[in-house]
Length: 315
Image (cartoon, rainbow, N blue to C red; front, side, top):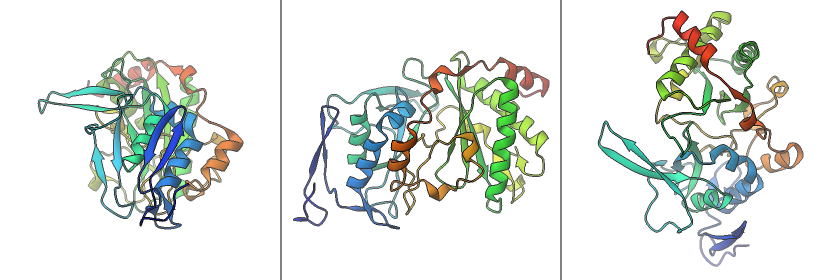
């Protein structure tokens, strides 16, 4: 354990599955609501290790860093800095529009995650494609994003309708809290389509949810056109280089809320603030990784692309 000989404690070296990861300033406060520290954050990720690695494995990953804790400046980091350990793996991404490239973190083991925590990472935002073919997603993401006046009851109802539509399609959805006021649902898909077609399928699905629940749901792209109490089904989270927080990722909130996987029947009663770095280790020890079967439940997008044709959604 760290000592208090310095302002934020002496460095701690963690043995993470045989890899030594040095945590400097382990007692630096990161979460102001209850005072959890950088070391608490590292220990949280160790406690949910298989879950966070499953969520990030082989995916390019954007890091959201908070060098002074979550009440300070947030740094969005694509590129791995110089001086990273030699065992850390990356994936090169190209951005033709700007003529640039970036070597992003590609998690293959828990030590990669804890190294990122040492670099002051709180949030992990992976792509929905993997290193073997970064241009072909294998994950469809349904983001239920409430407008400021929307109730959480409306988010829950939207999730229920989304579940109904997924069942009719024969798709298995894996729900989780966003770590904020929304909910996410992930679906594994066959990696056969580019980002534009996955986004097109996601919009067709969003239209169907909106048709069934018009009093709560909007698909209006421009924020000014959305009702203030609506839930936006954000299909654009499936566009290239768009990312959202992974399952088990902590969010940059004073309470240290977590994007927590749920059973479908938990959605009705669960509140976003129930899931924090303080409560999730115990929950994970009790229920395990609720995403454990996600890689075996693969859905073919073709029915949704047929809906996209029906709705005249452009390619």
